[in-house]
Length: 120
Image 1 (cartoon, rainbow, N blue to C red):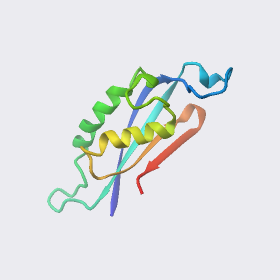
Image 2 (image 1 turned 180 degrees about the horizontal axis):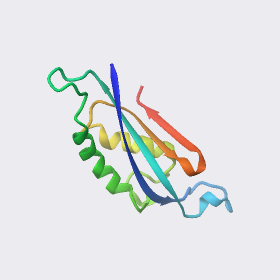
Image 3 (image 1 turned 90 degrees about the horizontal axis):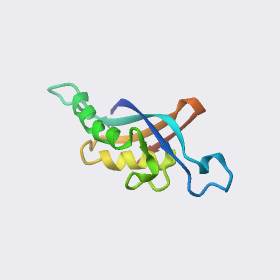
Image 4 (image 1 turned 30 degrees about the vertical axis):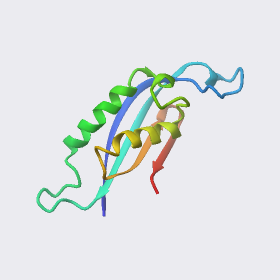
């Protein structure tokens, strides 16, 4: 079994509605996010690929457009836009178009944080 990963980035703002009063995360703030989407499978015997990366890029473009320069709290399905919820949201949005998907990772390099969702 092989894996391929396609990375995309987006800029977005959010706030944590359940953060304690006065906590900085309770206020609107922004991050530069990097998402890694990983697909797994056997290469097609004719083309030698798990999935053509042009197809992967096409599927990712809609997800990127829904998140980039948005207030994530206003994105349908992201009422609590944590890294964990973002990973699962992206996975769920891509599963139909990319059935080979096995994992989504979100990184926020400027604060040294990351999260990975891998469907068991």
